[in-house]
Image (cartoon, rainbow, N blue to C red; front, side, top):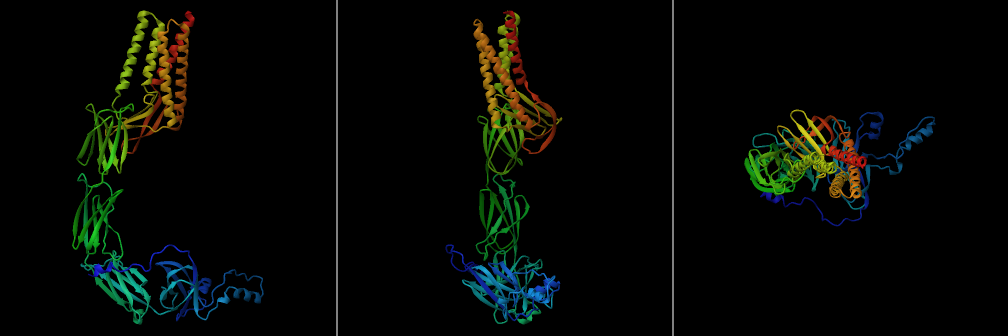
Amino acid sequence: MFQSLTKERPLSKGNVSAEEKKQRFSLTTYVHFAPSFPLGSLLSAAVGKNFSYLYAELYKQGNVVSSGSISKLPLSGNMELNLKNTTLVEKIKTVLGLFDWRNFSFFKKIRFPNLEKGEYLVKIYKENPLFGKERKFIGFGVVDLKENETLHVFCRPEGSLEYNILDQNGRGIKGVKTFLIYNNVTVAEGLTDDNGSVVVKIPCSPFHPYTLRVLYTGFLVDEKEVRIRLKHHFKPLMEASSLSLYKLVLRVKDSWGLTPAVDLNPLLKSSKMFEPTSISAEKKSYGEYLFKGLYPSEYTVNLGYKSFVIKRNVTVNEDEVLEIVFPAEFNVDFELMNSYGLSLGDGKVILSRDGKNIEGETQNGEATFSVPPGLYNLKVVSDGKEVVKQTVDVRGNKEISIVTSKESIVHKTVFYIGVILAVAAILFMLWKRKLGIGVNLLTLAFVLVAMVSPWWILTGDNGTVETTTKTLLYPSEMATLTSSSSVSGGEVAAVPDVFITVLGLLLLLLIVASTLILLTLFLQKRMRISTISSVVAIALLIVTVVLFFYAMSQVTNIGVGSFSGNGDLDVTLPGEGGTVVLPCSWGPGVGFYLSIAAVLSLICLQLYKRKTG
């Protein structure tokens, strides 16, 4: 009944209204029955001795908004003191000018200007008291400021209250909030230490009781009226209570029945709390959390990770164990490519974690899985061979593009066609003795193979890890493939869009050059047109080679430093994020050399034709 009624008590006073134009007021506080050394604060600062003086702190909603020393004669704004080369009269005038004589008062006072309206608490302290080293809390006053106000504070000796609280095993409870309240305003507060003890100091009030309110993790565990009498200036008022506290062990599994691989930050809340509070847990391991020292009540357990949040109700009146399944799953979209960056086609994707796995077939090189967050082992099998092996860290929805070790059927087919065409051209020249047709066929074979061959290549190997990066015209991209005994896979390198555009343009130039070479074969009898087609093809091939060299040099200057060379490079292991240093070499690839060979063969053919007439 006691706990049920506490939540009905108001936590704040007044109604919420629209923001009004803020007005500013002043509060003048007069302090009575509080003797101190005259000009104590000034003398303490000037001479370095501890003279007693009065000090005031102004609070609003529990926060200090202003403070200052209290005196009958306040200081003026001019604090410059220069007594050199002055007469006695001038020295006296200078010293007297330090004080604001117009605001002299027979009572000690302090003025707080420029205050917003609202409820304020003024606390009066005696600094450097005659007995004791700590300052004394000797008075307070409360005012609801709506206009310029005057407040009188009548000081009394400082008293104290000692509160002790133990659990059912006789151990002190740490962190219990203890409040002393006067007319619904908290005047003093404290927290219990490791022994469950706290001493709260407050002015003695033998005729007007304080309300002692004790909160533990938001629950109201004790509330009573207490009187701090004059005798409590010498010996604190003793109050004590005890609580039965329990623990809650929270065990969490994910939708696979495994320990979650992420921190779920569980919190406990309760509608029975007097002061809404979130109770955090001690993490014992992933998936196991311990709430200690719980007040017996009804709680709601909140678990969350990113956008997934679940809640479970639990009643704690003894040590409890609660098991929860956290159902969060995220989509992982795979885009799988062969070693040349084209779609993988058919394959099987296997994700495994802690002995459990899920597998699915790819469609046009794509596959999607929905899995709990965690670190997974990924395997991709195509045509009975493992073409990818790496780890995948799932912490949210993820899109992953992977270059596999599977060869490209398209590139292999075009390569073999080019080789067959080159052999046929050589045989044709040897058998038919027709150099023009043979050289054009051979050049066409060079260009055809160049279209599907790397134009620039980087290789590295240290005996356990090897890597290959190749720049292709078809598809227009730079693909990297890295493998070791434990991982294999790669990615399409991130390069500027303009470079990809240039690669596409070069492929188009090769196609046009191939068409012109093919046209030359059918126009052998039309010498003029045949010659023009051949010359244009030579020009296109030269432009292709030169443009590629320039564009690739711009990219390599930023990356590895030069178009060709060698040295040690940091290589990222696929799926692991770590790097390894490999001795590498890089330079032009087969496609680049074949294009140069095609240019030279066409030029030699034209020179031969001119010589033979």
